Image 1 (cartoon, rainbow, N blue to C red):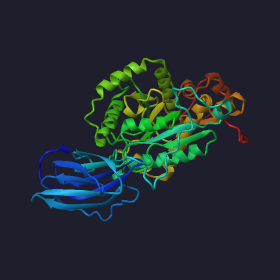
Image 2 (image 1 turned 30 degrees about the vertical axis):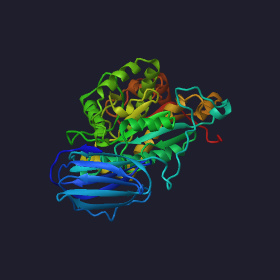
Image 3 (image 1 turned 180 degrees about the vertical axis):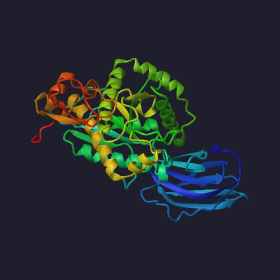
Image 4 (image 1 turned 180 degrees about the horizontal axis):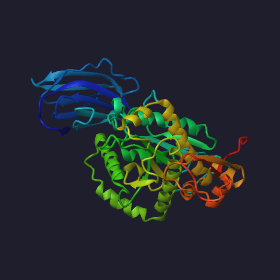
Length: 451
């Protein structure tokens, strides 16, 4: 039996339901906090929730019960002033319940999570990862290993009960970033030698540590967490890219954004877990050479993505920032967090909700990801085999000079020499002007006639 909350009169005004691949979340919107107890019954399977001093004043006719273990929901008064809610189930589940205080979008809530104990019959089984876990020695033959794709895990932030930031005209961060992630997955899957997996495929919540576990289960070569956050000032604007820092944030903005994202785990019901001792463990892991290499790769690919994004939208910072984002704390998977813009800025919010801008952001992120992995293909991948056989063609890119750019800075961002950049553009000196289009040499791509 589970007991939580404070004893106060309340009313259930609304019921909402989300289905995730391995669990179902039921949310009761309450007019105030309320005590509750939860227990299960068998033959048939049921979950009983007793809520003190509460009445039921919500419609359940529109709840989409398909593909969930729920077959019905009943309620009735109990002991005069209390309420009993019964969840009828088609199969056994593991239940967890907790209360949430009001946030920017919702009031008091009672959350019931139903975790599957066996695969849902109407959902396809999970596909086994095609690659060996990164820390292990691959067991494939050389031929098989050379055929695997580079796997990119795309993590759309927030979801379900956690809307993320709420911007202009009530634009929701969770919807914007899922749309961008889906666009990026389509582009990556069409790219030879690459495959993308969505960490979150729909509107449901996933705890932060679980997101990295999903990426690891798919043996991802890179985790890209996509966000569109808010800031204390509506005037804040521009996209950013973050990598992990073991020594704190590189700016106040980075610190505030990281703190905000890490607090989202409270919505998953794990807010009682202290993260302080986890950071101490992480600090020791970072001393290991493998983590150092992972962080270095994160900064490298992050700079490639940032430079590419900077060509289609203003940047908040012109270098990769570092902060203690929980979703980036994977010791074996290079990980970056992309803030596609500030949804709290009315102008940026209007762009972020349009498909054309979402597609442009996805194309820019793809350009950075592709450029990094064409130069640094993971061993055992198709890209590595093509590079070793000389089947990666070199092509020039274009870059439009922005305010604050220098020729040496552009060369550093794109991992080319200053001399080659001068030669490609016929420059006799390092003078450039805002709006000038430069050719950036020596970017690789697959030749078009590759199988």
